[in-house]
Length: 340
Image (tube, rainbow, N blue to C red; front, side):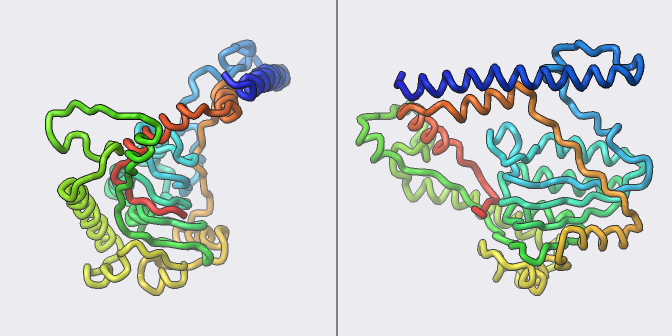
């Protein structure tokens, strides 16, 4: 192990102990103060709670207001489930689906507002969220709204097709209707480093797009057919959601992105608002509901935060960087996605 890696690990270990001790101290002080409020805080010295190791599942029911309300759900970051990707920019697919289920059974809920700031994501996860929102509307008869903050691309726009009305910030960008599958040819890198990948397969196409050899035209066409099917599905969803014909949609469904004003002109969104507050005021006026409940977000435990800091501080070796690259190369899936 290199000297700089050893130094980084020592620094990380010191930070681990310091941050852990500070966190425990703060929690103890808070719990001592709470103990003065009554017997219900008798379980003060539950160390799994102090350290953030206990059951962290959010009780959505207790977060709902007693009066009529609209729920605000953040669709921010890459739309991917935990099984699809490790880095999603704060997006929690499973939690959002569970929250929508809870809202479906909540009598005080009057609507859902999607707060959107996303480049899109995996085809399967964007479609799953869209279908969940459509189920919510069918079961409850309640509307769904979408507010676009900075950008709403590809799979994010796909999800927004569940909305009865789309309102965008005047400075936002919208669009990128399309599908992409990305991979890399790293055979030249392997050759330079003296690495040869051996694939024992049952057929000539079983190891396609593993990155160690050039793809054939036949293999590329296979994926093109899959992309075309996903694209057709996207077009059908948009035509239905925006009450457009294929002839109206096709000219703008080539991956292009548009300003909020242009998107409104093209019929891709309904309204443009100066600010988020203006958009929420308009939604409240339409619903005659002015209580907006934001979806609770599960916080990382102490140890999750510390280990993430430790991982970030520890330099990667050349072999680790290469392994990470090849893993990325082989894990690209079908995406409704665009770089913001």
